[in-house]
Amino acid sequence: MALENAGLAIGGSGASGPRRSIRLGLNIDHVATLRNARGGARPDPVRAALLAIEAGADGITAHLREDRRHIQDADLIAVKAAIDKPLNFEMAATAQMLDIALKIKPHAACLVPERRTERTTEGGLDVIGGMPTLKPFVAELGRAGVRVSLFIEPSLEAIEAAAAIGAPVVELHTGAWCYAVEMGENEKANSEFERLRLAAAHTASLGLECHAGHGLDYDTARTICALPEIVELNIGHFLIGEAIFVGLPKTIAEMRAAMDAGCAQAAD
Ligand code: PXP
Picture 1 (tube, rainbow, N blue to C red):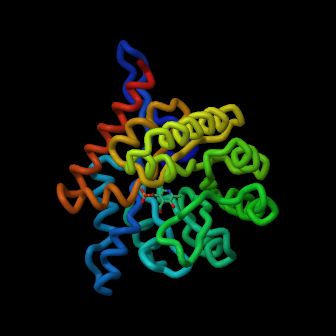
Picture 2: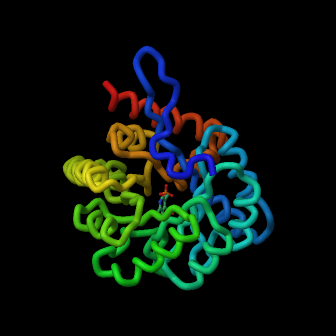
């Protein structure tokens, strides 16, 4: 797969030197949410995936939940077959999901906590308490050639635990920060961003690849792309929501521009 272990995707190197570019993964769960509201075949998550890639997304993310509330097993298979970019499979650390991941062999798998009653993934994995449970999942997926990330809170202890169990990648949960920004809670937003900044720096010091996601919009994506350790963002709800008004290609292009502007800010 083209982006396997790619780390930073480097753009053209002009007189100002190589330009950093952060990967954008579109989470297509909410296309399936809309489809499932009627129970038919439309809107088709595969169509959304192809359109997003054509518009500049670097990969597709999908979360097969235990209750199958949005993405279905058949969606994962169809998306994997249709796209020529990486598929990132978000999954709970359960025997059933492991079985599916080993059959589908996505490019990457992101282990997430899952509670049936939650609306969305509410917090990061309990990596410290869950070390004995998570370690075999990381090892088995890794042996199958799947690049494993752990979705964690931006805490130094969680990052150290992720490194200790052999995960090559962590995805920092940006939800608390984004929510504080959205609600205009400036003090909380500043302290949450500081946690993210320190966490991202810590991942790099331990040799982990650093992704981020949850609740991001154009502004927060631009801001977080200025952190030099960030390699990939996974974004769903905001992009699918915006696409209702302006279309998916325009939304992806605008997000790409926001992310590139954040990267350029880091380089200044
Ligand atoms: N990353 C992970 C691990 C997630 O669980 C989610 C939500 O499914 C996202 C990213 C995307 O979050 P949002 O839909 O809020 O952009």
